[in-house]
Image (cartoon, rainbow, N blue to C red; front, side, top):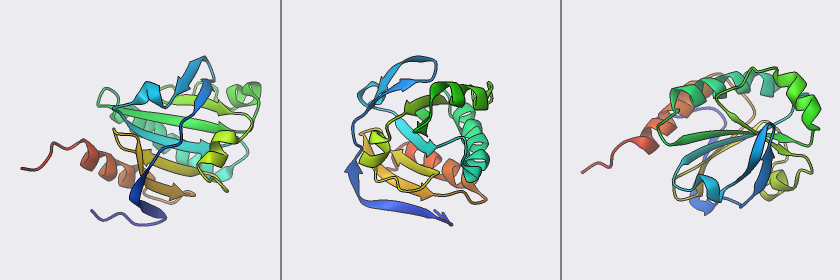
Length: 154
């Protein structure tokens, strides 16, 4: 699979750090709630210019893979719910928006800059990481997800 840019396969895969985060408008979400699903999680903030480019691509992915065992989590790093809600203005309805107000979860994932994206497999292991935003995010992410969701080769 030809993935270019700032993508890095995590070898060997590592267990995703557990978390419990409130949704912007809904109940808390834990990593355990999503067991058995492929998870795409992006740490972002409203003030982050590259995030403004990556989030629409992630929304397209969330819609394309809805009902196929993929959850897209947009984890806001360190902002108040009111600021996040005002910025989103119903732009991202297919993705789950979570609030990491203290930055504790971002710290457990080693996030030093945003946007930072992780992909975990259905067993909860981190297998891919992407830093920043570059053209082709939607395409490359689609290639990775299609490979993860493909039936096993016999």
